[in-house]
Length: 337
Ligand code: CP
Image 1: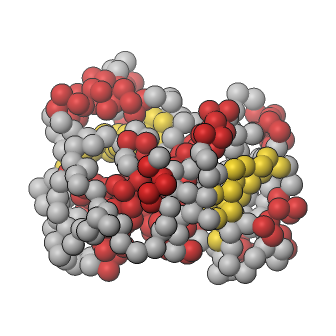
Image 2 (image 1 turned 45 degrees about the horizontal axis):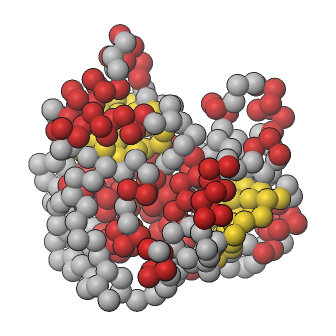
């Protein structure tokens, strides 16, 4: 399998030959080598901000956000601006012609006449795939910025860079995912992707009502090197974890307000619980947080969630330049080994 050749996170890795024009609906659209190339490019971008500032001169990014967002939309846009490109788009479907009944496909075909790359967020699972099919005749790549409870691939890129920079590797880690594992799309993307990188032990911490979907568990089962346990109690397992990935209970995906109110505060990470964790553990959260992490955790060196925000912008810079085929000045692709 693909992951067997890349199990070691150390040293030079073969860079992608080309990601030009590629849609990213799920991270399965990219090979492990291509994901590694993006991690390497993001690290380069971080230390060469001035040199890369004109990489995407003349390019236009469109952000079509049918659902609320702070980080994803602003980081997609900032990434393009910091590479020299420009942005158009809407933040909130109420401002777009969807309110007049326009389909996703028609909106995307229209925007494909204006933009060189599209990022789309939509409450329905599968919307990004439909958008990518509509944009295909125009050769405009579409990046999924979150589709319902399904996938959030660019969040996963931010998560991977954060884990890689904290531990120097993406395999041989024990990662606890805690909270809403049913509707948390970032959890689904992250598990599916880490399964491709080697030995990962998943500790799935959720109430019975919010367990990980079967199709995600099947991905772990299909990996010869990964395993999982499902547990209800965070304090019981926190001492075993290298990474604790906290999530928000996804209010907007609940059918029943009472269920949401009953489940939202099941897990709250605070300084007392963190005292039970390893000194090297990293706390990740895709944000926004509601109550899941007490603010007294923010000052702890294990808190990595604002680092994760910054990494999200760097990874989107790497991804945007790569799918547009714009070369980062001075960047030398790693030689395949
Ligand atoms: N992590 C994330 O997707 O945040 P936003 O919903 O604010 O974009």
